[in-house]
Length: 305
View 1 (cartoon, rainbow, N blue to C red):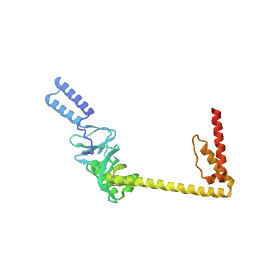
View 2 (cartoon, helix red, strand yellow; view 1 turned 135 degrees about the horizontal axis):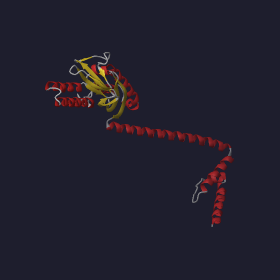
View 3 (spheres, rainbow, N blue to C red; view 1 turned 90 degrees about the vertical axis):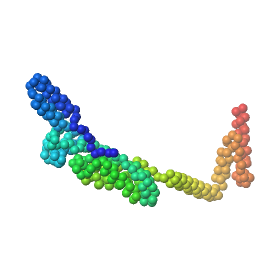
View 4 (cartoon, rainbow, N blue to C red; view 1 turned 90 degrees about the horizontal axis):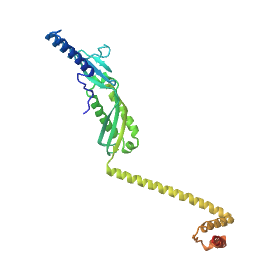
């Protein structure tokens, strides 16, 4: 359960020190018979009241002081309704510290479970909101338990946002949706003296069967793209071969040289064997070329021996 304020009790280190000193002085005066019993009792009561009137607010806190149950505002200094940071005094019995309100940036986690998207997909969404109190008077007087109110309104806003978007939009535009939700929360909490600075969406969980289906769909899409790329490459290669064939048709010498180069590249590796059509041997004189290459390799092997 969340709370708005910090309960510090009636005493603090300064008030306890003052109380102990005053009680010690009262006891010494009573022992020395400087004061009688009635005055001693009055001194003890005065010490207790003075000690309870001393309060301390930390650097990041503001104390809300009510006088006879009424907030005095900030105009009647030093007896204003907001005190701190640092030590301050109140009038015992008449004044009371209603709350110590923390003005640091705080974070609240909230979630929406089994909430339907616009395309009727149930999702679980975890999010956080960073907020701070910028007007202590409004936060103390305008709303009860403002931290719980922020958490509830954030959860409601998150459910509304999910219902307005499809699942694909939630997954792809998470930052934009978080920004829109932050504006909604800030608009609703500003009258309370609270501003929502940032909203972050931590996780979006979808049903396992839907996740498996989406995974298969993504894999099929990747395979389709790979096939398209392969087909495009094959088309480009065929176009290059067509262009080359036209060049070789008009230039038989180039075709002959290309055939000789291909044969040489195939035979220069050890243990390689190249199979070519008999028509190619006749048209490009590859047989003679193969013999020359084989003779060269034999001579090279003999030289190494």
